[in-house]
Length: 225
Image 1 (cartoon, helix red, strand yellow):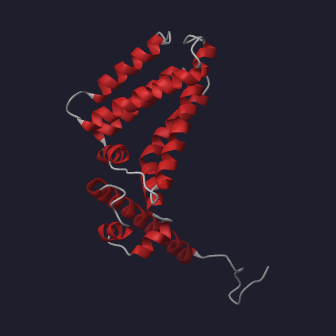
Image 2 (spheres, rainbow, N blue to C red):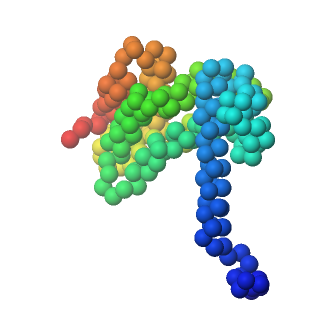
Image 3 (spheres, one colour):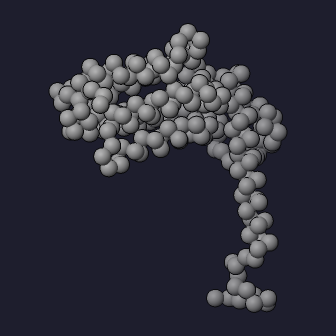
């Protein structure tokens, strides 16, 4: 190993260098979040297809080059914006792997959490609204459409797995194909979300969403303890 003239191996950093590197990383993360915050505002106001990177840069107070430092294109900005609010919900589904868990109750708790976040967290509500009403699929936003399709596929796989586990435990009937039940559940929950975002004052999302889920799984034979 080469040792430089002050007796420290190349590549080793002292406290000042480490602090500087840490500060640089924090500043980069701050800039990234500022860009995503600005994108949310502009996407909501103008729609995704009518928003340019220049408009996002201006709203964020950064250069267009700064956006390209963090993101490949506008679709990449959109996908990162979505991931930022959906990741906690994705992590909740990992509880299916816990010992002795009831898959139906995991699904129920995950949906209730999503309903509450949509009501109580302005950012979550804004991003869901953008995803539902502010996206027009064009050649420029092809990656956004692909993300929607991939995300839908992931949700269907998670729901199917949960329902299959529930059937194996005897919590629901085994004569309904899990893939069919998962597709129905996904359509049901997506519909509740979309209708609530269209007119949030018409019904209580948590109450109606939870009751709708309970009715659906009751039809599959589930009985809460």
